[in-house]
Every structure is written in C-alpha cells, then in structure tokens.
Amino acid sequence: MDYHSPYFFGYLLGLIHLLGIVAALHALLTVRTAQGSIAWAMPLFFIPYFTLIPYLVFGARSFYAYIKARRQANQEMHVAMANLNWRPWVEEALTARESESYAALRAMPKLGRMPCLANNQVKLLIDGKATFDAIFAAIESARDVVLVQFFIIHDDSLGKSLQQLLLRKAAEGVRVFVLYDRVGSHALPASYSQALRDGAVQIHAFATRRGWFNRFQVNFRNHRKIVVVDGLLGFIGGHNVGDEYLGGHPRLSPWRDTHVQISGPVLACLQESFAEDWYWATRQLPPLILPDTYPDNGVLCQALASGPADPQETCALFFLEAIHSATRRVWITSPYFIPDEAVFAALRLAVLRGVDVRVLIPSRPDHRIVYAASSLFAFEAVRAGVRMFRYQPGFLHQKVVLVDDEVSAIGSANLDNRSFRLNFEITLLTVDRGFADQVEHMLIADFEQAQEITAEDSRDTHRLQQLAMRIARLISPIL
Image 1 (spheres, rainbow, N blue to C red):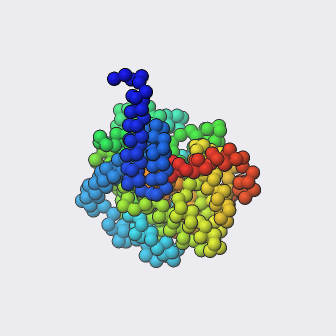
Image 2: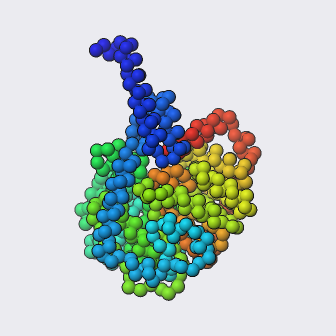
Image 3: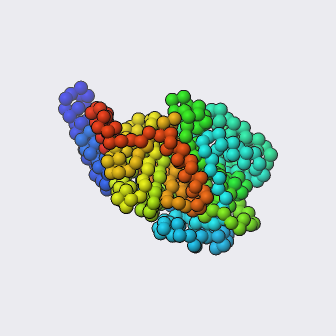
C-alpha cells in the first residue's frame, strides 16, 4: 500500500470519523448525564482526531464494568464484616431519632448508607498547621491500629515527616495501613512506598484500572481523606499530604483549608469507608475497632461516603437536599464552583425563598480551565441573586456547607461534576448549634477577607476571556 497516496489519507480520515461516530453513540448511551453526553458526543462527532484518545482515557468506556466490579467487592466486604458483628449495637443504641434540624433533611436517613449517630465529639481544625499537628499527635499516641487515607501524598518535607512517623510507630508494633489514590499521587516515587513496606507498614494504591477493559481508566478517583487512630480518634476534611497545604506553594500561599477531628461512634463509619476502599485494593479487611463505651452526650454526626459505584448520585443529591432544606441561610465554600443544572436551580430557588445564599470560591486558580468555568458559573449565579465571593489572601481549598443554625458539613467533596459523579468522597454532616456557631465564625472571618463578585465584574470581563470561559463551561461536565 502506498502510504503517501491521497487515497490512504482519505481512508484514514474516514476510519477516524467512523470511530468517532461509534464513540459518540457510545457516549450518548452510557454517560450518566445529558450534559456529559453532549460534551463528549459533539467533539467526538466533529473533531474525532483530538477527542478519541481523551475519551478512551477519561470517558465512560468501562464505567459499568468498573462499578459492577466495585459493587461486588463492597458486597464481599460487607459479608466479611457481618461475620465480625460490626456496628449493629452502635446503630441500635445511638442512632439519632429526634432532631428537628436533622428531620428537615428528610432524605438523609435513606440517602446515606451510614446512620446518623449521637454522642460524638468534634473539633474544628483551621488550616494546615492545626490539622497536621493534631493528626501527627494522634498517630504518635497510637497503641494498636492506624488507618491513613489521602488522595495525594507527596514525597516532600511533610510527606517524609509522615513516612518517618509511620515507620516509627510500626517499629513499636502498631499496625499501620496506608491507602493513596494512584492518579492523585502519580508523582509519588516507588521508593517512598517501598520504604514503608520494608518497615512493616501496609501501603497500597487505590486504582480503577483492574482488568483488561479498565486498563486506560483514570477517571474514577478516590478523593477521600481519612485518618483513624485506635478507633478512638479520627480526622476528615480537605487537606492532602504536601507542603503546599502548609503554605509551601508560593503562588497559592497561604493555603486555606479545613479539617475536623472526631471521636465517638461515627468513627465506626469512617472505618467502614476505609475498609471498603482497602478491600477493593487488597481483598482483605483491615482491623476494625469499636470502644466498649461512649460518652452520654455530644454532637449528632453522619458520615456520608459517596462514589461512582453508588446506585444513585449520592453526593449531588446531598447538596440538593441541603440547599432545599435551608430556610434562613446556606453558605458554601468550594475551590471549584461548577454546579449541574439541578444544584444551580436549587440555589436560585433558595434565593427566591429569601434564604441568604453565599458561595466562597478562590481568587487564584490552581487549574485554569476549571477556574474559567467556575468564573462563568459565578457570574450567572450573581445575576440570579446568589452572593458570590472570592477569597483574597491565598488559595481556598476548603469544602464546607453551613445550613441555618445547626447543620454543617465538612469533607472532601467539591461543588462540581467530578465530586458529584466521578470521585469517591466522604463528608461529615454535623447537627449541633455550638459546632455550627464555630463554623459560622470561621466563615465570617473568611468572608471578611473576600471580595464580593458583582454584575459589573461580568460586564468588565474582556470578550476573549468570556469566550474562554464559555468554552471551559462547554467541557465542564467532563472536567
């Protein structure tokens, strides 16, 4: 065959377009949302030269094969846990049944796979130093089991400090289990993990590329951040392990983030979430610990673990339920503001009900395409009556929701399609006036350091910038 012949190039172009049409039809049939289907199908149909390979890597090619395998692993894990008689007495004794604020979230008891439990103690950890000081102190005090899970672990100063601490505790006989996301921690050298293994620390990567049909899959990521020590003390929130979370990234510093320290029966749920992910990675269960007794008073908490293997879009539905339940205010902070149509409509309806709706987003980008899409959504939200703010001192990475006077939620989930439908996330829902007051004071301080976005900001944006934002929004469902 003459590879320089125009006929060859014609056949090649025809084949690429045929594959693009097939892929476009596949996207229409398999992608979970209409926006995502269109965002993939249109470029696959018209410009397949640029989109076929990205669709192979990031698209929904193996979505159903993956979630089927993941659900099977979860079923196996739950059968194994049932043999341990794990958690039933906690649910029977401590499940919250009487709370007006929790009752307003009418879907939550069925939306979450884990119950709302009473008698927890929670502590707000603002920014990296407070967070990692508390985590490191808890691990230092460990006597039996340490569970550590992060989306990102860097081999930098903070990462090495964590590594050395875990090695020291393992040498003392503490059983240490570390789970990280393979995509999020793609820069983590093999030597980092090997040093931990050599020191008797069990460490594994969470990956979704198991099996032939998933070998290109990088779209489903484990974005959870969980630490549990001896079943007595736990941590979840927005921080990963890296110097930037302590202000070590000059362009984004100071880094603004929030974590929560937890003790109480809800730690059973954090351990269960970790066990699901660990079982997927290893087909083994980590040690699961419940104390014999708990304090008689404390905060109502529900751990909401969500992910693409759920039978419904748990994370997106949580945001919808939280916003719809608000009667006085709903304040949200997120580094990425790319709501889908349902969440955006819920925000608009809350404004029409007279609810004080505020959203705090960064003023500095860490991902420029996401930032551009977020900016356009922010301008549209302002026109709908939502008060939008940009945090000025540094990069805002916290994920916090405050509803009315008692309900707050802090975790790993962003206000975007990736958290709604593609990432494994975990959020701690708290129902307590005292803790909500602390969250309110924290957010008021953040809003005081923010600049409110106005309608004039949208009109003053250059036309080329507006075009870039609209292109970014076009692909936002697949970001």
